[in-house]
Length: 528
Image (tube, rainbow, N blue to C red; front, side, top):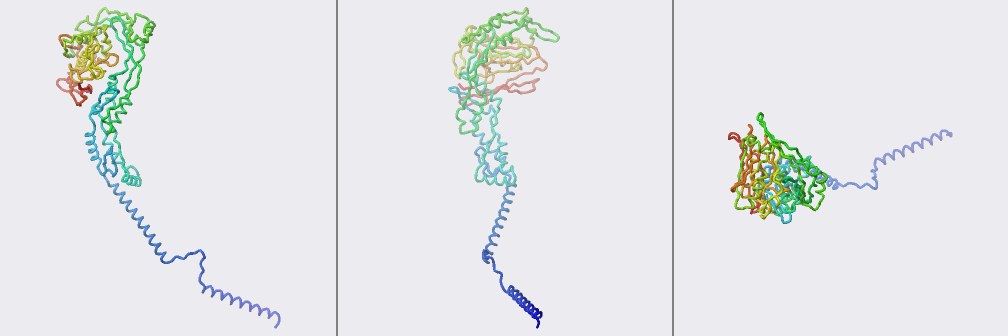
């Protein structure tokens, strides 16, 4: 055997050996199991079973939650009642319809709302009728708001809100409604009754002199703050029986403006006359001017300690006065009204006559406003006024000029019967003896005035007489085609242990038919 053949034989031998080894490895792989990683933990059959049950429970729980959610949502969507846990002003209205909730609230407020509030400032007390200022709670809106609880968001928000009210109550405060205009007027009237009220500077003409009275610093009702106190008291029933504090603020009287006063009183004399076609009256007017210069008048006012100043006037009389043209200028009696007085009370009678004489013969032009205080002037000893009974801080005491409010009240009724426009009027603290409630008008020089406007097309003339226990006002003018008959209806609307409440209406008629009814006033009086 040569070397080449021996080498080939060796190669075949090696090849066979290699094939044998490969076959042996294949057989070994087929018979040997896979050996897992040392970190692998095999799952037992028990664990597999437990895992499957837990998964099923979670799925079932989720399904139950979803079903409950939809059932709860459907219940809330179909529910037509207020949800549980909702209160209105502390009253539980759960599961009630809005109409039932409103009915319950209306009954509650009607039984628990007081008739009046007591207002107090120091020792001064007065009352306000809640019905007079139309105080009420908006139960309709409150019931609607209660119904909307849990219904204003998406279904998820609504459901959460409904659930939360079951564990924590929701309370809705109804809106308090008040006649703000009437309440403001009442507080303005109360402001004039304060014992330390502010007194404005004022003036009037007495013979040939202009009398200027310096005002005095005082207090006025803080309207906004007091209204807030009143609203708080009404909204909180627990404190509504306690007196409500009248909040006041200090106020200085307006400074005396002598230039403005001069411009207001200055005029040239005018003769009276009238025309027949068309019929028109042109009354006389006295010429009025200062008898001193403006600088001299300012010097008179320079004394800051004086309470009253006298400015001499230059009065120029017209050649023809209104009284000279006689009754033909005022041919028609538009209205008349009388009151009775005790003639034996000489001081009071003197005061009535003095005030009446100041007004008697006064002509008020169309569009002109009559001011009682300006025409009558300050009630002073120099003017002849006497001490007589007046009302001061809720008490009857003697005061200078007492009784002249009877002249004011008599004129007020005549003005209403003439269908003239009353622009300023205040009732007494007590119902007077000479007229019924809401038919009176009081005046206090410097603070409370009675004013009316001639809203007719022609001038009017005021004629007043005081004699034999009767005070009478007559208003003359020219009747118009659109004139109406006037009736006054006044009556007591309520009484308490401390107050009397009343109202008055003006009823307009033509040929027996009612054309309209107008509220004149709502008043509060103290009881004696």
